[in-house]
Length: 376
Image 1 (cartoon, rainbow, N blue to C red):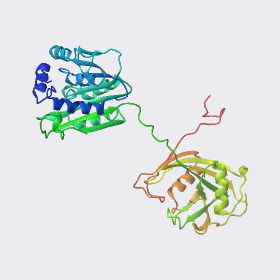
Image 2 (image 1 turned 45 degrees about the horizontal axis):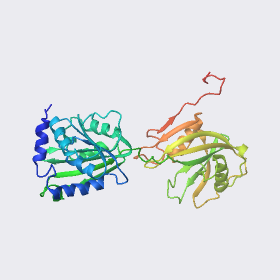
Image 3 (image 1 turned 180 degrees about the vertical axis):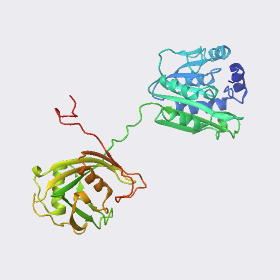
Image 4 (image 1 turned 120 degrees about the vertical axis):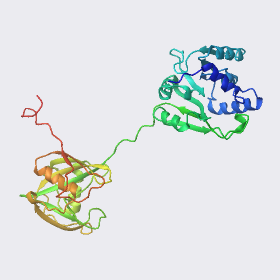
């Protein structure tokens, strides 16, 4: 591990043109920047980590904020105390910027200039510094890469991403008034506002209903046409639940619209429930209902613009040219399964592939209380 001579490092910073903010023009430029980074709605509690001789701490105090400076070099702390001697509500402590000696105190702003790059674990430091902030507080970092040393902005913003939903990057290299000269290396400020990220949108799914109309061992299938999706393939009478409907009402409506039968609620039995994802699509949940032939009248094709034919097919010998989702549901129904996940990979075909791998996963269900397999 590299050993850092902190006193020598601090000296080298203050020897850089106006790092100690001795030039009035440079000092004024930094004061103007600080006003944009610090709260302006009243005095703030500011923690200045690795404060050195107190140059930025003094600017903070002069803008009406209460500042606590931390530096591990006793010599730097002595110089900072002299610089801040005439400033009310300012203190400077000897301590490590990585774990500043502030006990349980919380701050509105935690700031550090040219400190993070010196620490052995920048990510751990950022996590701890964020924990020192009050709700709504901000972390102000002034860093860069010069003469081949330092920490790139991308590394800092990546480390802050899981800690702060709001991270503001500001390039400082292009402003010579901050440095007393033109610089062409990477210098920047980052203002991060930790807090709870915006809640992720609630997961929503389309709900489908599917009719398994039974005539003995046969089921009624419809061949899709003119819909733009899976045209030419067979599936059962089906549709989407509309806003305000329950699944049973939706099934009764779809049966009437597609095959002209008028089902009563008591005509329906839940066959299975399946969560499905089409190739490249979003998840959806399908309710498959069983009804017996003769309930609600004789079926016929009420939507010839969407269906080219209706036909009965043996459940025990289903045709291959089916929508894979529907075929998986009927296969599970015939096998006595009641809960199924059918999750296509993006490269899968919408059509059933009798030679391919089935995407259906059958989920075990509990038994009826008091029967074998049921919880006791």
